[in-house]
Length: 501
Image 1 (cartoon, rainbow, N blue to C red):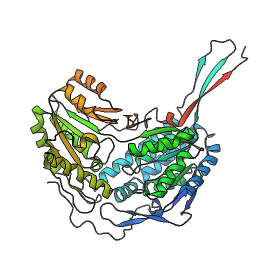
Image 2 (cartoon, rainbow, N blue to C red; image 1 turned 60 degrees about the horizontal axis):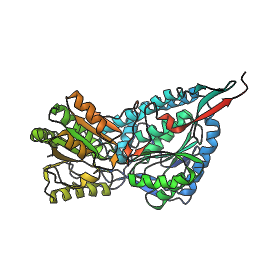
Image 3 (cartoon, helix red, strand yellow; image 1 turned 30 degrees about the vertical axis):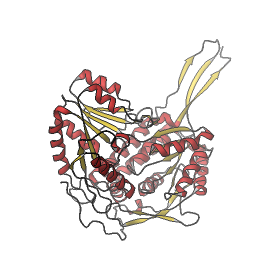
Image 4 (cartoon, rainbow, N blue to C red; image 1 turned 90 degrees about the vertical axis):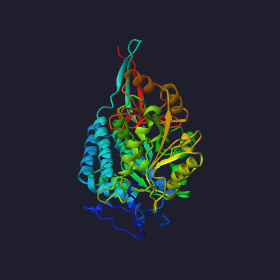
């Protein structure tokens, strides 16, 4: 069985010690000032592994959010007129500042999110890569000319920033999802209002602190913190309905994405929606089994399964099922679950009780319908749940219809390519999919047939700074990262010059 922590949940209060203690900010950041809520209300943030209170941040509402939007609007007047070279240089200064503080930023992620320190360091590197990538892309927002069929006419198409961008970021990658949105927005010449997740606000505030230190003008970057409930709803609504905001980028559930899209309709905002998934992971009979198991471990259990592109349904050909399960179970049994800063920890807790309960529900309901638990299957103390593998799954178990978002590998069997592609596509979302096969023709066929925005062929890791990230169907639209990422924050302006004889 995987090693599970004992006696780790102690509660109380914790003071996080950093090499650069100034990274630990506990106020919201609006118009270049660190502020409290107007009514002085706060929300408590906890260490997800120990249950200790890490600190409190302001619980802002619609009024403060409107002030942040107004500050961003004022800053946009000058920021949008800066040169691409200037924006490049500032983003690179921020890149180096993140690089210099990488260990501390990773410690913040471990404390507020719970993931293991090596994984948190990987997130910081991934996060920082977006600053570097989009710093370079700032200088490549090329326009073009189009020959006119009319005499004396010259057509010029120029790329311009859309304006103020509202960025609503998730807790599962508290650093990377900020830079993946903010870096292209700032590179394009937009200003931003970031709605930080209530579970993990400190990474967002550290980002704002470093941006301030390297010289980003006041109002260019604003960070709003708020608690779940009425204020979170009010903040989201203000961002979506305020006509000054011209772009919304959201990463989160399909349910919430639909609400935000509806709220944005009255002002016809430009939208990017990176929503829920239910990723299939297929292992064909000709696959390299060891590579497939390695891919499954990386793809399914990264972040304790709390990743939107995590494999949710593992389909393994019947002829290799027994061997695959044996190898997978052996790997999972080697996991060390615990506090992310402890030596050797590979996986941490879940972020919330709601997330934990969902994993427990998925396991219990599947077992009631006849599924077999191969590894794990029980909750630990606090927010910990045993990394779990289940198989012998009948039809209509929870993983068929919704993503677990936790450390549960549901392993199904199949006998033909046609059957497994049909099953893989039998959902209303389409973010990512994965499969392993040595057959080149099959690789092309299946990659093209899977109804997802991203496919991993013989790999369980697909996220990179240099490629577009996004889904289809009810997994949303728009792309982040890659060459097209900056275009999500720009529009094409046609300028027609007459009288050129």
